[in-house]
Length: 164
Image (cartoon, rainbow, N blue to C red):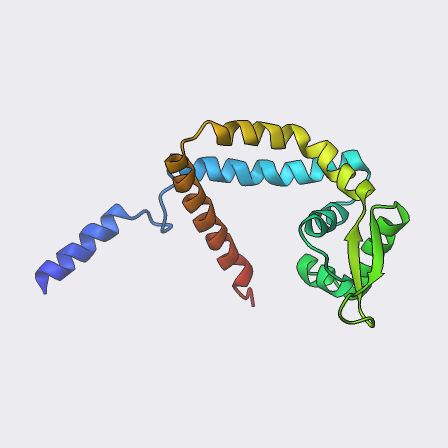
């Protein structure tokens, strides 16, 4: 019993009060997240878009979704999502099309104009990240990927936690 208590005290002594130790990798990750948020805001401003319009274009660059899914992903009302989509449609960045499997539903399609709007502002970053990625060996990339996927899972825990 004394050994176990001593073991627990030793582990507690090694753990910071907040429950984590801000290592150099955690500091770098924090800087990346902060910079990433700034990039979205600056790109949206340069493109004459709101932050939510830019995020919507980013979602549509990966897959076709409908207005209700836009609302869910942005955590806004369907009325707000409709306004976002209407503005993107009026700029020619998005088109509404009937859903292939269910004609009662609408899917949103990113136009070439919308894709160019996002990519043109982000291309310098994409080139720099590609150059950085090519500087790693396959083994190093595997470690970086494992770390980033684990970090994404940790972020998801915050998103899944009910704040009430």
